[in-house]
Image (cartoon, rainbow, N blue to C red; front, side):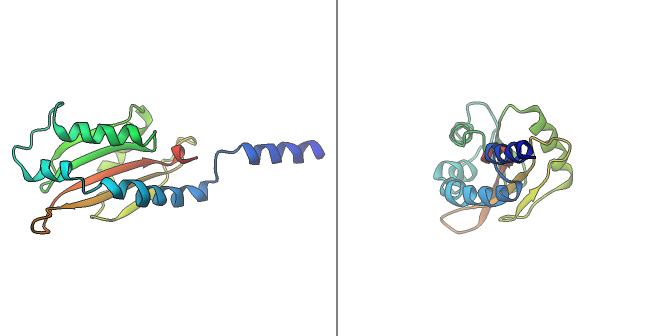
Length: 159
């Protein structure tokens, strides 16, 4: 019996984090990190200055790639879209499972600006939770919405 109790204690101490703590950790990350660069002047400038051509050397690609690398695996993808919903720039991590889940979610979920969705990625116990946050980007000169920034987080990377 003591052996089972010790095994349970070791498992509890070695566990990377409790599932119920992940949504709070994800929201803290959004509040403390993502919110600091959501209205980055370089991203807003890309949406206000034509032409909006999605290409590899686009300045928005460089900005998004930098934020994706700085997130250390917490962000699975970042997408910048114009007011019509067209993708201006998008960066993803190289996880095939994340791509599969992301493609399924795009067919079923369209969040409104400032709405956060936290959901399970069923079928993969390692990827217990995902969150997608959609931020409305506004033109600082007149306050009108000019596009959106979609940030998808990987809950397994938070612990």
